[in-house]
Image 1 (cartoon, rainbow, N blue to C red):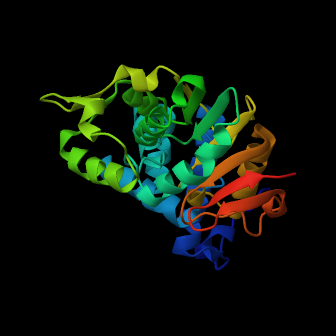
Image 2: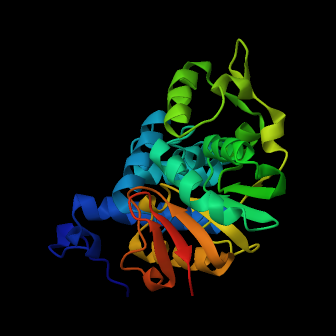
Length: 291
């Protein structure tokens, strides 16, 4: 005969040994595993504290009470998954964000690119495309854009569709203009867009050599060889193991002497690929593959 033991019997169940935080962590692990197995999106190696904050943002927005309740909603309602995906995607961006980076790119990377007959650029984790447009403007002003192809990718197809619309909020144009000037812009920033009631529509010419495509840095592999890879302020959301995996993806995707551009808080230090690159600009985290 089977015997059932409960706390009332004076014997603690195995789950009783878990504290509140540990139980929530278990719930999050089960949620992420469910998302991966049901939808194919793999967030299991994202940095925990940032991930937990974003999950609770969605839990509160859906008026739910727990991670497990979110799991139930996500697995049975693709629209909830779509809204959660928007939250989990890294979409903090701006045109000419960190202007000193673009100054360094003009001064140190552009001269290298002038030696190439054709230039392949991968902008990984491009979000809504602001930094893709920034790079297209910079390359246009340097006379290089006609021989460039920019592959802009993100895990979130909704953000990619938004990028292709070429419309950005009018209220951010002053900020973007200031960034553009600090980044060494050579024209009037307003030449690149037309102001409308609903936003600023940027020139279609800026996307003539750009391809937007869905790509998951966690689960998808390399898809071409590139002269430049930009992935700025994305790796900070990954744990060390996943960062190492993505660094391997970038290394395999870069041509010899190709340039890797990371975010200001990101680095190759202590990764297995640290010694495969030389630093072109330590402060702006611009590296060149040498082996």
